[in-house]
Length: 100
Image (cartoon, rainbow, N blue to C red):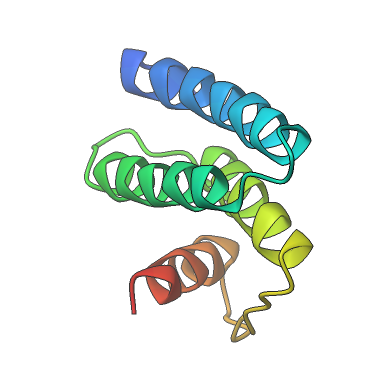
């Protein structure tokens, strides 16, 4: 049985779609690195808020991780992810490493 999508899930997904577009636009705007970093910071904050929700979905957390890591990699920043026994734990570990 599919899980019900909550308003929080939908809003977070919409934020991530907008985030990807804003990052793309910032890179196209003469490689606006400060703009990209500002967007990444906001995405991390929004992801942390979403992590506190009761309805968090692993697929959305994976989407957040991928959406955040791609521009970081484009700027030459790489993060190692420690393998974990569960996919949710791996995603949570990766996202929390951004805040360290």
